[in-house]
Length: 336
Ligand code: G3P
Image 1: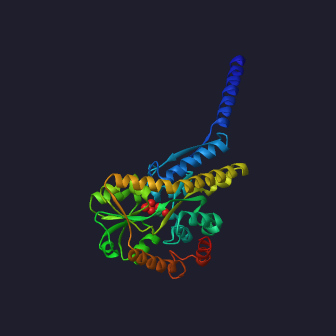
Image 2: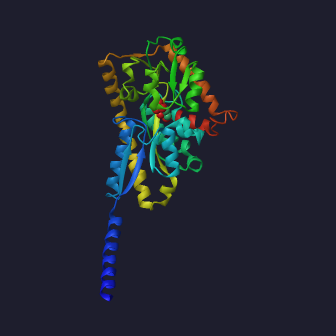
Image 3: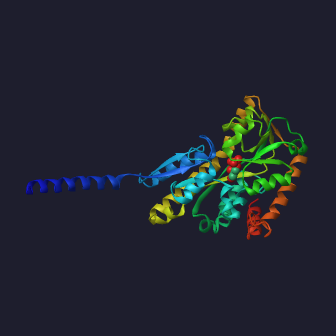
């Protein structure tokens, strides 16, 4: 009997030790959810983040990328990241519902070029936009990068703003977007990104506005072949992590997450113009027509944009009010 007890204890110790070694060596899996397809800037950014983090941490972390709304549409995976069942995500101004300043990531007509936006965001706009965000959302924003300037895609050609006004155009279900559409005189149909194609097919919408990367990844140009380049909003997405998880990390690991997110964002900033060119070539090769908006149309959008800017400064529009909006505008302007 004594021998049996001793044998069981020894085996227990061996198996226990083996399990501990296994646990110590197993990589910690970080799930990161996004809404865009493979090949799009958002998904490239998530993969790059994963590569950098795995390398910096020498395999301590393994990043699993879930693109294309595979962990649910944006509202769901944002909620899951706040809850901590998903560790990280990539999204954009959807998070403005917690902190209106985050909508200013995509202030209409604020940036002249990718280079301008890049300088401004890295030069202080990032810090101003995210100040106070974590406390309200339970999420930490690690870095921001561009998906592209938004242009209209429509079934019929668009020559003047009046051609757009009668159309049902999809807009993201975000106060900034619905308000800007209204200010432009557009009949905006608010819906998540993943519903765009089925809504075009069902005739619920006549088109919408998106960066080139979305227009090609969804192939919406096959149904809406007229692309009118207005560039009215630069879409910026960001990498977010559950704040409790972040705070639980040792300082060295925090530094790895920050560095990986920064490096991934820089890679996307460097790639985005080339991705636009490739997308335009694909659209044109497949019979789509890409044309510049007329100066009148651009002037109309600019005037509507400026009216929308005012709402960020107005305490009577609490869903958009940003107390330091003037500081953010001035900072962005200073990098022109
Ligand atoms: O940042 C929000 C923006 O990405 C929403 O646009 O078209 O991707 O839903 P969309």
